Amino acid sequence: MADSCGSATDWEEETRKLAGELDASFGDKVEVKYVDVDKVGLDKYPVLGRVLQMGYPYPITLINGQPKFAGGILGDDIKASIKEVVE
View 1 (cartoon, helix red, strand yellow):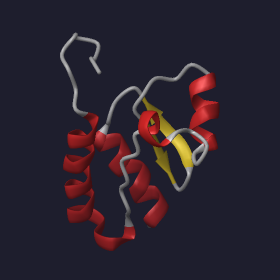
View 2 (cartoon, rainbow, N blue to C red):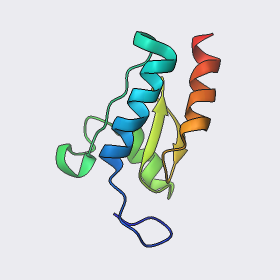
View 3 (spheres, rainbow, N blue to C red):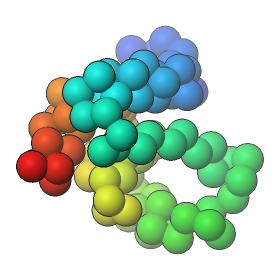
């Protein structure tokens, strides 16, 4: 997968990095899960299918099962959104 600058992005690795940051900030209050729907299919994740039909790009970040971000892993924005939920 290439980002807007044309370089390849390993979203699974970026997700692992974010998971470490979120664990340091929130501990066991947060679960991070990377799902490659090209491998497992969209059947288990119907909300992702709807988001993709609306034209949003991968990766898609859900918080409490609701789509929040698409097109990148926005660590600071994700942390702020999670902070709102857990506090």
